[in-house]
Amino acid sequence: MSVIQFRAAARSVEACRAVISQMATAVREHDLAEVGPAMASLLPKADATVLHSVYGVENAVSMRHGLAAGYAGWSDDLHALTGPWGFDPSTITAPVELWHGAMDRVVPLAHAKWPARHLPDVRFHVGDREGHLSIAVGSLGEKLDQLAARLG
Image 1 (tube, rainbow, N blue to C red):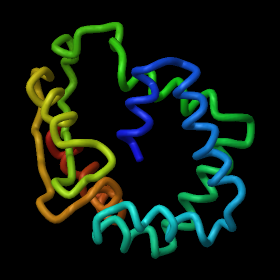
Image 2 (tube, rainbow, N blue to C red; image 1 turned 135 degrees about the vertical axis):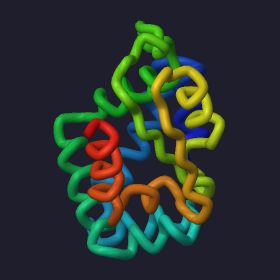
Image 3 (cartoon, helix red, strand yellow; image 1 turned 180 degrees about the vertical axis):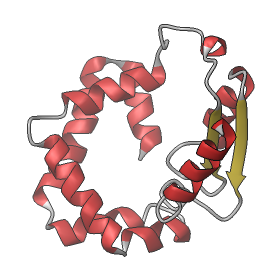
């Protein structure tokens, strides 16, 4: 899924828009209860489990709401992810807790390792049995507590 989007974004704005348009149409046209299970087939078991929970429908509602005015934001996000950031990450002085699921099929582990090497005050955590969604869903509060404790 992401690989297709990233490749399209690297090719051209038009290619990126074409791919996103297809994906946005799929989200808009499916019944909200079907979006999560349809996406789950592309993900590891940990993420599929999350998408079959209440989160799956909530995520579909959020996606549909976000796409109501179009998909320009989705396109902008892809270009931000695949292009220069406009600043040097080594200048970030705030403490960062960086979490990534080793089973993530949406964002490769290498994409998380890069900021882990370039941020000066980072703690990098890899959840061995976690994916893209499961790394946060159900444990976001715990992760925020860790950061709050670090800021003391």
